[in-house]
Length: 257
Image (cartoon, rainbow, N blue to C red; front, top):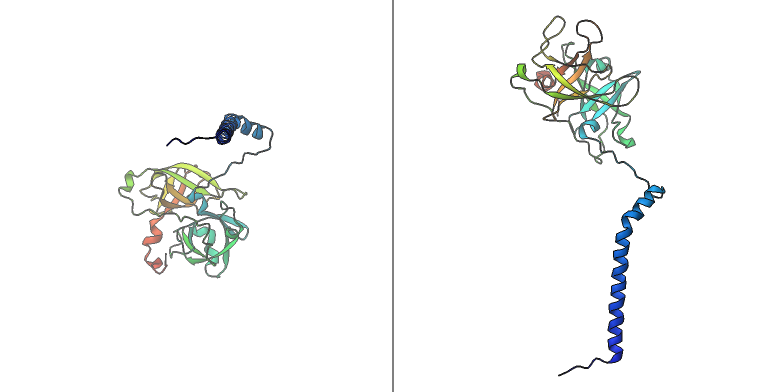
């Protein structure tokens, strides 16, 4: 059977085809000029480019510590609100049950600023320059801060000389500093007035006390910033407490990490 398509139907089909061709042609023309249109929009300032700064986890977890008029650094090591810092940043608060102020400055959220924390542990030996502090209130669930991972026992410490990252808040401003450094002696500083729990790096900046020393290769914390020599034979040397002291300390076994 032969179906006859009338003149009216034929014209209707042709109209549909021409419309489709025209529509596709307009789309192709638009796509062709799209790059130039986008360029002009940016050039004229109609659309502004904004750089989104993605902050690394170790920067987020490192906080500014304020103790009265003094300041230092602390870093988050537990999702239960536990942080580590240098003993000399908080030692006078332990017996008085006072608080320090903790601010995660790299998190753009007021809920993570000006938080109160109490000192919950100081080692018996005053030469051990580390302390455990705990936030009074639980951190918000979102955004989630990735806690810093702690290194285990270092094998062959006499041959351990990694590149490290040291984070802290030096000077009088409140800006976080991110230093790339090198371990000079991990086996331990064993001269007068010190002990073998310390290790050396190259120069750091005054005011970074309590900050983390991170193995760049593994991303794990190996130490806590203690002090920097600014004069004399040891000028330009940073000393740091070995992180495993905290977790190997039998008197700290009561801490629920």
